[in-house]
Image 1: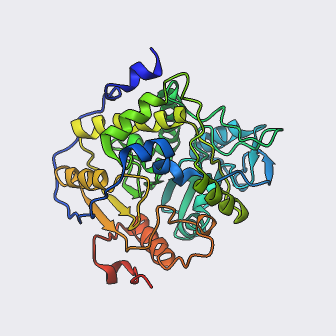
Image 2: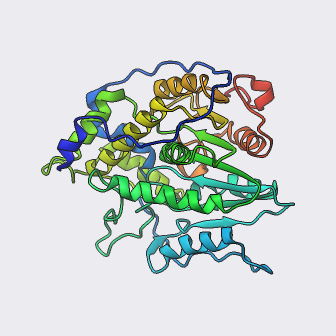
Length: 384
């Protein structure tokens, strides 16, 4: 079946197990976002969070080995087997899978999933803090991400999931991560940023009893523009004459150049066929949690200046979770962009929110201490 034929109806839903009875939660409302649907599709602005031209530094991937230990656990062996799948692939610096061993008395494991077009580098600030709090921290590379530039200087997008192969590529990755985490004793916490947030939800839907907590940072639960944009992205991404179009207008080329100069790893020149994969993943998740809401406790952070993902969909998701699980939705102040985690996408900007966000994230992962609108409690200062 062609991409276009697959894109018109909603994506196939997963067969998720029935979950437990509901509990109560508290949810904060996010301001509605208005935008141009057509412009969003044609310019790709809703996916520009992944726009970063590959930096010149290249690493032929040799998966980082775990520090020597008296005995290698099944958990460590499974991680090493996964990390070895990057061996021999020419990757950009900061794009190889990372393992941070717990620096204090071990409490469990945390899986960090980066965003579309990004690399494990996006968690360079958060991962060491979680390790210091007593967690083994896994930071995998999302499928097809982080490849080095080709000989002609263009970006290597050949392995990035598309509308044709999105389910086995993203689905197999999620199943692999669930298998690794299932072998870890102690707390199991799943953290996802942007596309990583969509994959975190997908992982929890596939294994609803596996994780103790979810932390979602500006998760891709919907594309800004809503169902119409998602349908158009899936459709255009399957049309032979259109699916290979590079989605990067002039303004974003300048933005990407600035990110590259600032040291950001990842790719920028994604194509419509890659956008189709994201739209179909979003639909699959929506069908899954609409049929059977999650019960795992979760903390959600939504940005104040969101350009790419749907804050309306995030709000609706959080409300639905009020019927089945424990959730806290925190809208961050105006001035906080989608690219909230690293200085590489924030060159010259005062990241007034970052320290507080990192502290709040560690507290939630370690102790389940939530933020849901109490700014003093969350230690989020007012925008300057």
